[in-house]
Image 1: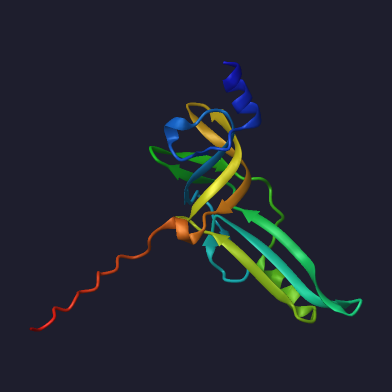
Image 2 (image 1 turned 180 degrees about the horizontal axis):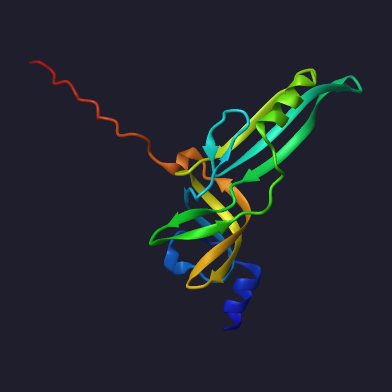
Length: 173
């Protein structure tokens, strides 16, 4: 009982991949993103996604060196989405992000910063991710209050498309 309370307060480092393992408290969940009713549109590529990270910067000279100065840094989330685990899906409530629209990106571009560069990282439905946050009961099910989202490295995601094995040639005698 005390051990369970300590796990809920301080959270275990174990990644949860199964819906049956869910308990209220801090958790790290690993699963596949499922789109909710509403998605957000990324400003650079114009793609629908569950969340994106946007960073706009330019090159400036300071003390004889070129440094990167960040003009805009934003994390934008859809109002709600899901995470598919083995045996079920948990609803995810993201934190409030800084709003950013394509018009604001065009305004930043038009300001003429030297060496202006904008990048974005998308999290689309079907992406394998690790979510860190607090699991809470919501009626009969669970909900995750998101604190952090990380993409799982591509090497761990899948082995890739099926590749036909090479045929060995027989030696002629």
